[in-house]
Image (tube, rainbow, N blue to C red; front, side, top):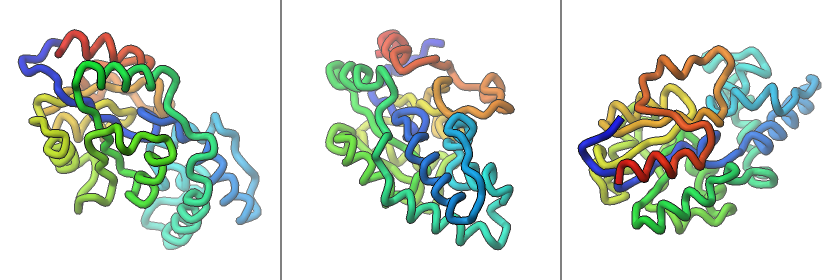
Length: 224
């Protein structure tokens, strides 16, 4: 689908779109399970829930919802473990380094909009040497609201020096697409990301999808 406004900024969700954080998050969840005398779970079983953060992972592993009284304490324990094991195995998805190089060579800007809290987002970006390459980092607690609210998307566009309509947002969860569309951005589904078996991305009404990071290069070339 063509768009009348050329793309100037590419915005990424973090976990499951820009960076493969599942191995470190899986390790964290399993350390938490061991602490509570529960059996560990395979990485491949945990992977689809990573994009939904602690709500998704603790819901999957412990059968809890955010409203359960035990949830808050488990979440704090999880985050403390994760903070100390933030970037042992996490890395850019294969092909994403070439995508970022392409974006920068075309004099476009790129940034991150994530629901991950800032005390985890910034150190992870620093560990991966990405912090000074991007035009903006908007974390889940940067503003009073987070995705699927479009407010973080508008803020990211402003920081990147673009209008929302000049941005494309790439994500692997329905809330990513809702947030991007709510801001008037073009939206792309990262089908290589952490998508649950019961999710149907065809219902998210995105402007398109990519099966691997390299697909973004072809998409951008048609819209700049």
